[in-house]
Amino acid sequence: MEDKSRIFIFIDDKEKPIAEFVSPVNFELDTRKLVDGQHTLKIVSKDPTGKEGIRLIPFEVRNGPAIAIEGISENAVVDGVLPIMINAYGKGDQKKFLITGSETPHSIPSWVWILMIGFVGWALYYLVTYVSIK
Image 1: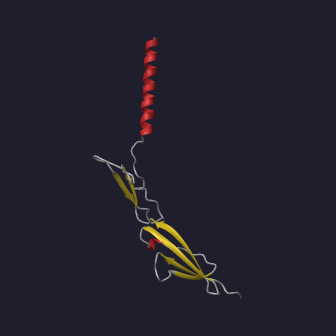
Image 2: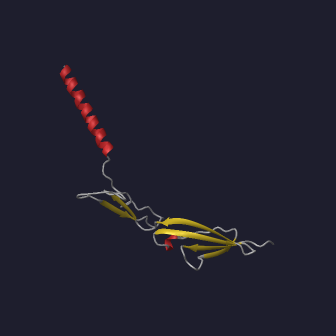
Image 3: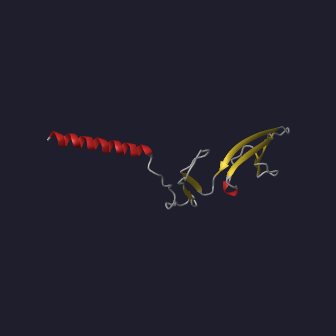
């Protein structure tokens, strides 16, 4: 039997690996144990001769409630009074869908207002020309 490489899995800059396996391996990373934010998955492989290979995979965890904000965007230049709408909602336990609070209400987009004003203007024009013909 040939010797196989050993795989060590680290999260962020931890000294102790969260798992150690013999290659090949299927692994499930439980992100529920991590805080929300940026993390790095570090995979170190050692072959039977002792040579090491390292792979870093940055990822972002977002297990907490989602936060949606309308009225201001990142790096915006603003002045005056800003009406801001904030909605936060969780995903539930992923076995049942939570309908309450799972959708973020949005204001009506400006293109819809322009379309409505255009339609009403066209309808009024049509009505005026139709009435003046009779």
